[in-house]
Image (cartoon, rainbow, N blue to C red):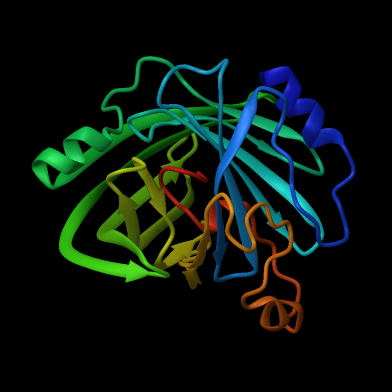
Length: 239
């Protein structure tokens, strides 16, 4: 499966609107149009452990990011596209992220490490907390969370930190981005908001879409900024 996803990541990104097809042995179950000019296709694969979920993110140029989480919403692996870089969760986390603990206790702390295939290593610590607020977005009931995390390199230098709110689906056991702020290590806090706007399920209009529709004109009109796909779903789906 890893080899297949890597191969897909190396293919040219589609430039025109269309309907995305998941890799062989996999099935799309949800398409999410979000703020920040992003559309995500969520899918599962038969070859993966039960509870694992994939997401393919698209901007106006095509697919730019793949990520996989497990049943506890732990980071498992990701692929940045153009250039293709794989990042994985290190084994033996000091305090693994736990979706089950978040649901049962209302708060979950985590301390874990990530490694890129070029050998770059980073350490992540933070928490998720249920606020008790429920919101309904496009007919989908979600629970709001508060989060904060810091990512450092092995020397302790802050690579990235963020705080804000996200949303969870108990049924689907995953996170969706929300409003917040991020600091890319220079001490300047930047506003971020990748909140979901539209949900499409099998048979719905927009299911499998590859072109984002929200905030794209605003993004195109901004001056170029060094960003990464990490900024939208900060702690579980896109570190």
